[in-house]
Amino acid sequence: MIKEYLTKSEAETEDIGSQIALLLDENSFVALYGELGAGKTVFVRGIVKKLIPEAEHLVHSPTFALVNEYIGNNQTIYHFDMYRITGEDDLYSIGFDDYFNNGIIITEWSENIESSIPPTSIIVKIERISDDERRITVEEEKKC
Image 1 (tube, rainbow, N blue to C red):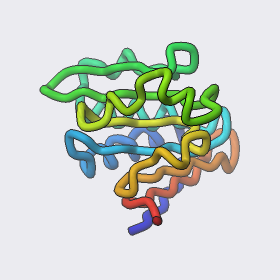
Image 2 (image 1 turned 180 degrees about the horizontal axis):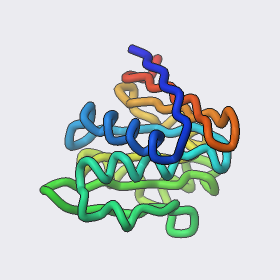
Image 3 (image 1 turned 90 degrees about the vertical axis):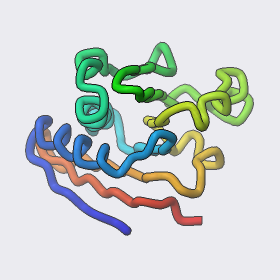
Image 4 (image 1 turned 60 degrees about the vertical axis):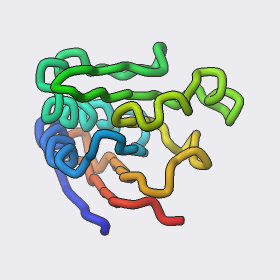
């Protein structure tokens, strides 16, 4: 199933993230796509705000850390930035497989890890229309 949303502010983009959080189970995989500044991290903040409200203020792009971990409400969310990942060897070196089945995984720059995205992932594409507007396309399962 594919759904499309048009947002006109950062707050609306965050709200869509909160709505999508309701689709997630404890081991979901969410693959985010979008150019720099599209709103991927804002979208993640919406998910975290809904599932682990006490961690909302901790959400920022994990560009240099590669992964941020948010814990609370008997829930763990792993937020990855795959911008600097160039292949399977990089994923192996960060122990990416060790995170599976241990919490929700959300990846930014998912185009860099296409072959490692599970077949039952939620795919989110965020397109920048203008400074404030975004088109968000959510596909509930990856096409095989």
